[in-house]
Image (cartoon, rainbow, N blue to C red; front, side):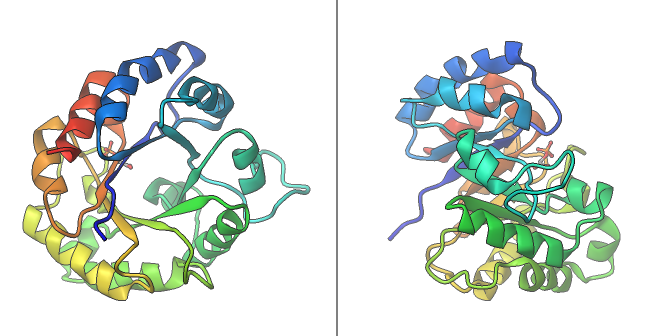
Amino acid sequence: MPRTALIAGNWKMNGLAADLDFFDAIAGPAASSPADVLICPPATLLAAAAARCADTGISVGGQDCHAHEAGAHTGDISAAMLKDAGARYVILGHSERRADHGESDAMIRAKADAVLAAGLIPIICVGETKAEREAGKAQAVVTAQLAGSLPDNPQNMELVIAYEPVWAIGTGLTASVSDVEEMHAAIRAALPEPLTTRILYGGSVKPANAESLLALPDVDGALVGGASLKASDFTSIINAAGR
Ligand code: PGA
């Protein structure tokens, strides 16, 4: 069974209520695309974004969550809360969270368990730094991250992996098509459900490179940062998934 492509936008710490018109702009292209379309806005906009997306087929998701369901964790948000606000997916272990908040593979695994327990779909991010790639360690780093951060019992659970080389995020640099192909094949081989799990590529995906990346056999979609903030760019990427 072919995997349905997933085109996911990660707004990071961007977006105010005035930016929600974005959803009206992408609704038509999303409806006519064979791909699933997802936007992960900041948590402050999640409920309003979900309301805008009702009846459009566009999903919304969180950018992170706490591993516990509730409790004394000031400033944190649980998977159950994200679900309550309308989320269907949750990005976990983004390199900005690994770097800025010291998130370890074990923490990401605990969050993935929480996301699955809440009935949501985790998008687990992995990726090597520039130094690790230059040292020839990219595949070893990524497969170790995967082994450490996959949930305990992922069999028969839907989850998504995003391969995002750290040096390609927000830099305008993208991994070469052959490097992406090689890494995605290695990730697929390491997955408990290799045939059904979607593996996204992320890192400076834009209209100009989306088509060649999305055409690769083991690339099942894209996790898009900067280019998900502009409806015209994101629409071009949605359209590239349909070709
Ligand atoms: P970028 O970000 O598209 O701006 O490189 C991707 C990501 O961090 O998910």
